[in-house]
Image (cartoon, rainbow, N blue to C red; front, side, top):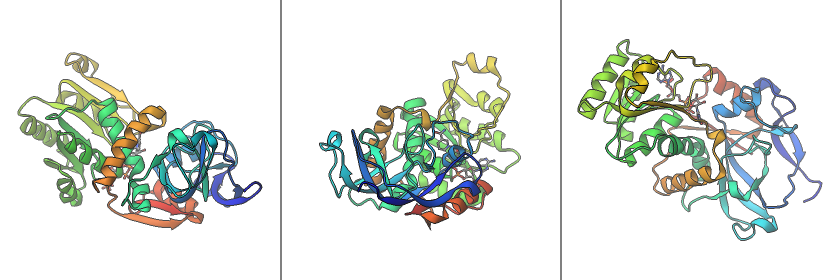
Length: 334
Ligand SMILES: NC(=O)c1ccc[n+]([C@@H]2O[C@H](COP(=O)([O-])OP(=O)(O)OC[C@H]3O[C@@H](n4cnc5c(N)ncnc54)[C@H](OP(=O)(O)O)[C@@H]3O)[C@@H](O)[C@H]2O)c1
C-alpha cells in the first residue's frame, strides 16, 4: 500500500472548525506494533474540538488527522501485533488523534496494538463508536478515580448527556444509588437509566432539592460521589452535601473557577479530584475498554440518538457541537 492516499479530516494548524480540511493524506504505514484499521465510524467529541482549537495542548503532527474514537476492521498487522489481531477483525480504539498519534477521522488509521480492542460480537460498529468515549470516561471516573462502592450515593449532573448517561448506567451497575440532574423533559430518560431521584437543573432551588434528595436517599449520611458533567459545579454547596470521605470528581468546565470552602472539605476528609481521560495510561484505558466491552456485549451502553454524517462534514460537525446545535451524538462515516 506504499504511496497510496486516503480521505481524511485534518488540520494544518490549530484553529476554528473552519480550519478543518477534508482531502487526501498518505495512507499510514504499518510498522513496529501498529495495526492498520479501515475506519468504519469515528465519533465527534467535545475533546476533539479542544484538540483542534489548541485549548487542550497536546503533541500534534501536521497535517494532523483529527478524531479520538474509531470502530473499524483490521486490514494489515505489523509483526509486533500479529499475535493479537488479524485481517478482518472488528476493533475499536479511543485514544487516537493526540499525543503524537494520527487521528481517527480518516479512511484508515495505524493504531498502536496496546490502544486497540476487539469489538464484541453483536455490537453495531456505528452505535459503539457513539459511546466509546463517554463509556470509558464514566468507568474511569467512577472506578479509577472515585472508587465507587455498592450502596454509595452518587450525584450525576447533566445525566441525560453522553457522559452523564454512561455514568448513571455504570454507577447503578456498581450498586450505587444515583441522583441526577437533567432538563425536566429528560427526567423520564434518567429514571429509565436507573436513577433513584431526578432533579430539574433549571430549578432555582436545585441545590436545596439536591440536599433533600441526598438526605432521603442516603438516610442522612450524605453524598459519597459528586460528578457534574455540565461544567457548573457549585462547589460551595456541593461540599456541604458530602458524606465523610465524600469525593468530588471534576471532569467538565474547562473555564470553571469555583470558590471552594476548603475548611468544610478537609474536616470531613472530603476530596476533589480532577480527571481527564487524555491523561489515562494505556493500562487504565485497557481496564476501561474491558468494562466498555462488557457493557456493549450486554447492550447496556447505548447512545440515545445518533446523527450520522459523511467524513467530509467534519468541519460542520465540529461547528455544530461547539454552537450547541448538534442533535444527539455525531458520528462521521468515512
Ligand atoms: N474529563 C474527561 O475526561 C472528559 C471526557 C469526556 C467529556 N468530558 C466533558 O464532559 C462534559 C460533558 O460531555 P458530554 O459529551 O456528555 O456532553 P453532552 O452530551 O452535551 O452533555 C452535557 C449535558 O449537560 C446538560 N446541561 C446543560 N446545562 C446544564 C446545567 N446547567 N446543569 C446540569 N446539566 C446541564 C445538557 O443538558 P441539555 O441537553 O438539556 O442541554 C446535557 O445533557 C463536556 O464538558 C466534556 O468536555 C470530559
